[in-house]
Length: 334
Image 1 (cartoon, rainbow, N blue to C red):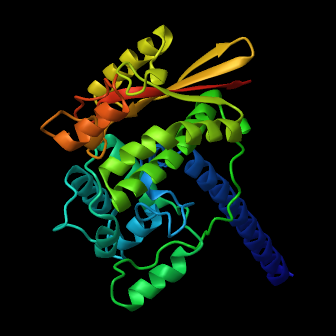
Image 2: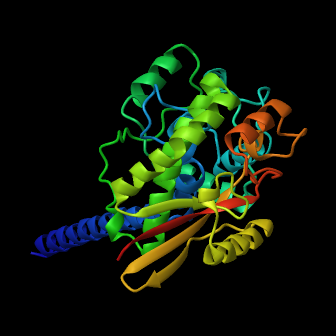
């Protein structure tokens, strides 16, 4: 009888342990999903990196490798999070051919333009990339395995294949600020892909022609897609149609102070009756300076002459890297 009671206690204990482990595992999974959504690095990666490294771009339309490729080339079984963050900090501060680990990407796309990101921003993006699975295009896994078979892959194949079959976020479920930012960033991605693709394939002068002829129609098409009014405005417009109004000028000055303090900008949200207005800065990188930089320094004479012929009233020159060139002005219904 004592043996039977002891056996029964053991069974109950084991069942209790299994139940406890199951609850813990379930909680951990939910907790991890929440952590992915709320991790600041995810939003920063989408805002700062996806113009060139968007996972939705096809191989033919790419202007840079997807972020999953960067992760797999930089992380192996011996790479600590600290090592990975340090590598990302070093590369972004000084991108160059000699230190490149992704030779195929450099050969195809060239060295990425120098960016002026705060160290905290880079740290949060790298932290997110290291700890979580990130989106990858459907074609990537086969491409990476083929590259690794040729001895070019440096990663260990971490992460499960995610493809592009993940559930997409409904923009209307987001907060007003996040929703407006998504509208701005998706439009930025479309313009950036076409603009930088033109620069790579045809040069800066053709890119100016593209901006002159295609920037407005593409922006308008994204306004239709999102059922919103999407505008890019500036205190120093290239096209007079992009001149900021008094309200927008105030926000431009606000964002200039934020960026000058090396802080991460957040969308400014204003609710007016049944409308929502969202504002977010447009900042310069080294690529921008080819058309918006200082004459005879980063902006050459030939490019400046083309700008003057296309935009006789141009004011959008004289910038340095990481300066506010204007803002996104987004208006949509509540």
